[in-house]
Length: 119
Image (cartoon, rainbow, N blue to C red; front, side, top):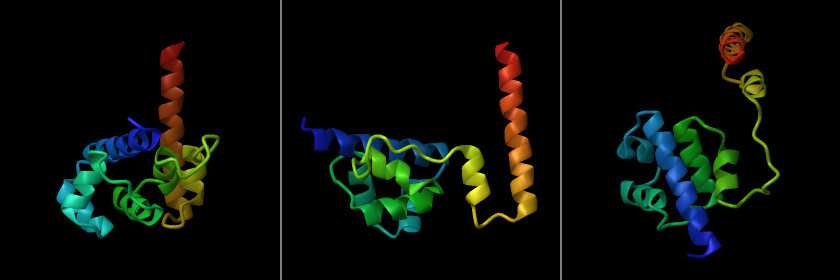
């Protein structure tokens, strides 16, 4: 299996995992991304190598960062690091300041609880 084949399979598996985690059907994600069901199915199975534009549409349909798909598909350098949760919340233009503050408070509470459990 070539490196490109492994990357296509990796990005496809990642898309499927994210779709299942979000409890979104293949049909619904295809509709959200503006692509056909068979094409999305082929991407998930690693049979098709999607373009950056298609990956961006899929990411939008999954409500995830497109960069995470770009990296898995080999379109970004391996040194790329997606933003932290805090950076992502703070930079989200769809959230108002109050919503950001609430989300950050919840996130910090979970992180603090996890750290306390580890001790």
